[in-house]
Image 1 (cartoon, rainbow, N blue to C red):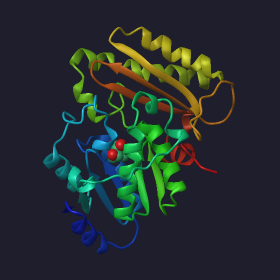
Image 2 (image 1 turned 135 degrees about the vertical axis):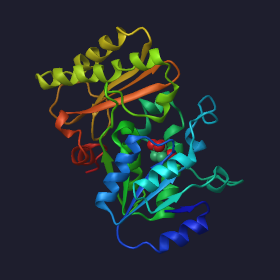
Image 3 (image 1 turned 30 degrees about the vertical axis):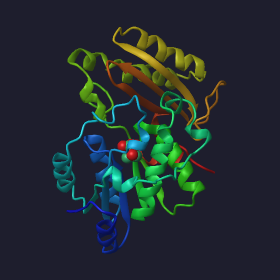
Image 4 (image 1 turned 90 degrees about the vertical axis):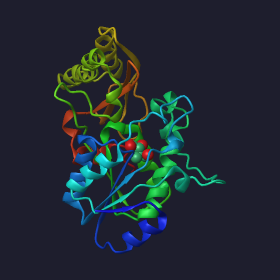
Length: 295
Ligand code: PAF
């Protein structure tokens, strides 16, 4: 496995790769969720190119940039074991040298939900992903459904800026009790870790109601609110029932595909989770077809 730390090293190594390139952008501290992206990319592409970069532009001053978990040797060993051919590990100075002043803002779809909770976050994500798309020239890029609004932002940017690549969305990978895998789960104390199981339980209850015929968005939101309220260590930040395509919040019952998403503070981390409704959409094909789809 080749490791490129500079743009010149990346370009040289990239030039030697032919066929379909699958890009897996990450911030490192890899878990099974990232590896599922790598495995899907390997199954579908001739070469997998992963990036590891904790992107300062997507953290606000109050967030955990300095303490964000990092373990580069472990990440590289995991990627090598998965058959990744090339890893790009730039420094912050390389990506944002002195004098840097160009940012990408995706408008409506960046607003609300994570966009309200983390002002500037999606500007940072869109900027770094646009830079990686330009540098790497992949044919496909793989993202996790857990960050569903991020997927919709990246899809919109890819379309609006005419990047010639396909965005693939892979299902959420979960712990045995249903908690969505996340690098920030390491911040949970043992008691908080147990309490965190309410997050997947809450959307599962709403999904069951949907399966039984409930279509009113406010009823689905209330089911989530009531379940989270039962856990003293959990504080619901938001629950959203939105169009899976536009991410616009829904008020009226409909049969169009929905994204039910929630953010819950449990101790230090804000835990994100979601499901697509109907539940059959929570697959690589279903999520890639509907989430942030542009007609
Ligand atoms: O999802 C992430 O890990 C990051 O937001 C991404 C897409 C790698 C951009 O920094």
